[in-house]
Image (cartoon, rainbow, N blue to C red):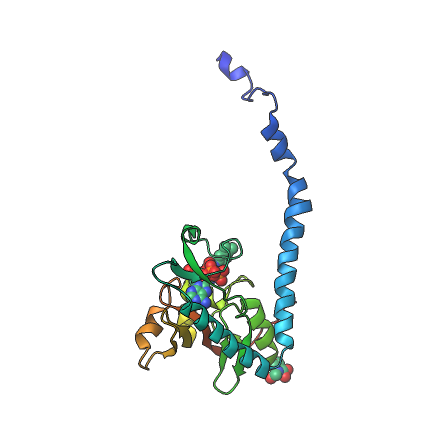
Length: 239
Ligand SMILES: Cc1cc2nc3c(=O)[nH]c(=O)nc-3n(C[C@H](O)[C@H](O)[C@H](O)COP(=O)(O)OP(=O)(O)OC[C@H]3O[C@@H](n4cnc5c(N)ncnc54)[C@H](O)[C@@H]3O)c2cc1C
Ligand SMILES: *[C@@H]1O[C@H](CO)[C@@H](O)[C@H](O)[C@H]1NC(C)=O
């Protein structure tokens, strides 16, 4: 019975360095981490705005030039000397939580960072043609004023079309419309040998069309996608 009388409190131990680091972590978070994150987001936002200011013609012209650059870069690769091909996207900027250790091994980087333009919004076909680094926020800001939206809008503004197709995008509306990739009607892909093909579900590249989702970039570089739009009833884009 005597044991029940003594209070169940752990005895105080002496504070060590780690205790102070934990106690004062807010200093690092508030003055370093938050400003740094805000700067990254501001940079992405300004880039989106800059893209929106360009004329559709200019975006499409840049697209063709950038696809040519990818093809040229792939042709520079010497398979005997250079490692496997992968995107130059840094692991810390990607939202995906997949292990990207392979990027530490010898690899041949192809920079896709300029593929961030909405190429066309076709109100008649109800299709948005976009480049792979276009993010959810960017599409929503462009289509909302037209009373249109993607059928599957993944919930973080920063998620990209390329990641949602080559990974596997999903959202609540997937109960009705399927996975993100099920709302895609065509994909423009640069293959390892430098060929640029447009894959749809019933053309000669239909195997590629069905293979790309969840391929994690192993089949080729997606350089644009045509995605189905649906009419909105209630929606408002913030920012
Ligand atoms: C807090 C949080 C919330 C999330 N919410 C959702 C959600 O609501 N819905 C959802 O679906 N997911 C969600 N995710 C997961 C997210 O969808 C995946 O991580 C997805 O991969 C998107 O990340 P990303 O756009 O940065 O793509 P990345 O991580 O950069 O890419 C994903 C994969 O696609 C490949 N890839 C990317 N671009 C290309 C390209 N152009 N050509 C070939 N391959 C390419 C990459 O190599 C990689 O293997 C969430 C994740 C977090 C952390
Ligand atoms: C979008 O819908 C609202 C509400 O129904 C309407 O007032 C507006 O004119 C529509 N905009 C366009 C571009 O159709």
